[in-house]
View (cartoon, rainbow, N blue to C red):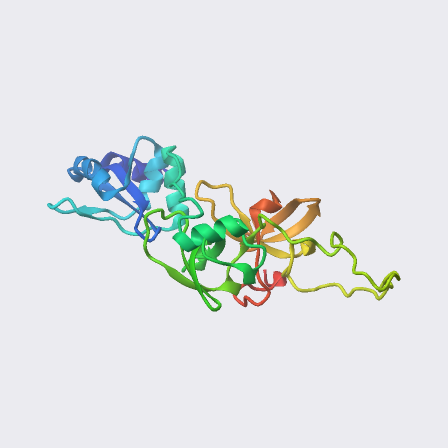
Length: 293
């Protein structure tokens, strides 16, 4: 690190006293740094603003604070805390050592959501079965912010009304087509063809079709049994926010998968159980082909 960079960090640390950060009503992260004389006022106003407080006590926090915009507080106690990127918010949360933002129970989507969750589990077995109360994975407005867990609060034909699962007090809903969401491993998976009972054929055994099966070149999987090398899925990261990102399967051993991040080729491979993966529907054209990266 150069002397100029060290001096810049020291200057930020000496001026910036506290950082306020948290989620807005729609579940979007926001954060700002405060210097004297507003630092003490900002600390007192944090509870009213429903924000966390992080004191600048070391170089790591000082580096993060230097990337944040300056906040403003008004005489009436209200403040302006700008929105920030989720990856920066995640680093602030990690540096603070505080617990992640609470998630609401999966059946908090209203009376219909409670009934659906009890009847079918919180993870639907397929896209057509998605109903109120289910948890799915949806992409943020900015693709660079990844994918996030959301709760279905209503359905109209093929359109889903959803809200962010991490935004416990959010009333804002979003609309997504049911085929554009990711599905986590279902609570009650349908039996596979190998597990299904063979059909009766008037006392005679059904002839076995020996026609060679053509290898599926599509990067998508219609079912969990089709998952294998080169298939495109969503995988959950290890960070405190639990974001999901596009990943490509490198290898599979039973229910454990080795994957590489599709858009971050310089990062090492990861290992995930299938419970930390999600399927993308082949009809969703937003997900690009495997060979595009």
